[in-house]
Length: 249
Ligand SMILES: Nc1ncnc2c1ncn2[C@@H]1O[C@H](COP(=O)(O)OP(=O)(O)O)[C@@H](O)[C@H]1O
Ligand SMILES: [Mg+2]
Image 1 (cartoon, rainbow, N blue to C red):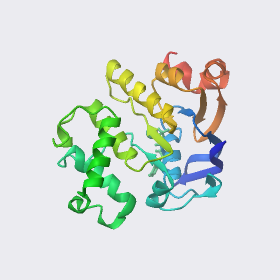
Image 2 (image 1 turned 45 degrees about the vertical axis):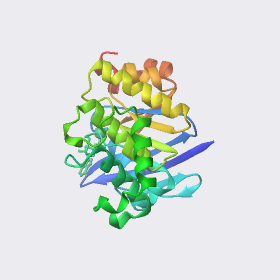
Image 3 (image 1 turned 90 degrees about the vertical axis):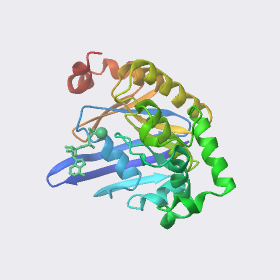
Image 4 (image 1 turned 120 degrees about the vertical axis):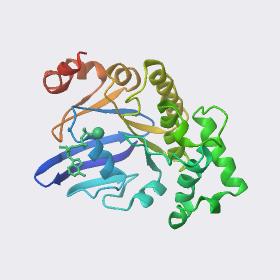
């Protein structure tokens, strides 16, 4: 079944066409990879899906309902969660409070700034469960700013999970990580997918993309230039020209 259906999506910024007539589908249960060179429009695609930017033209349907142009909290509540290319937890808050803020967004969007209101027993249990689900080591009351990058990325995923999403949009989760940390993150992504979460993964690390995704969409200069399984994409001459030839794979 198609979970997300994106048609003719176009977004321009002062003369730069970040997305041009992009059409793609996300199928329920899959891990879809989005690849392409820097500036291809990958993050803009996530910004449009998650409601952070309104597209200029085109439609985004989630379970058949048009969601383009809706506000981020509306889209998050529908079950689409995202992480950011540059991690942005609240550094002075504890890990638990970072998740509680996200959890609180689901029910009390206006109160999100004052985490005290969320410290109910049920929400604390949900936060702990989200942190355990991503394999966060004990010490959930330490400040998020003290975490190494690999664990900050896990925290970001835990915050996204607090919304109980059916789709997780991950923007370059392995960026800046050491090989072993990337592998652990990859295992986590696979496990979440096996638990039923559909994943859309923007990723530069080709071994990761090829290892975890069964289907890829390639963007270049805002245009969808190819779609297919990893083996077909690796042989696609347009993709090699635009992107793979430059990554050394
Ligand atoms: N908020 C913005 N304002 C102006 N230009 C932007 C903005 N976001 C993205 N762009 C431009 O849109 C293009 C696509 O960017 P982006 O979606 O970040 O690409 P990618 O994530 O594939 O590297 C780039 O040329 C970028 O400079
Ligand atoms: Mg990006």
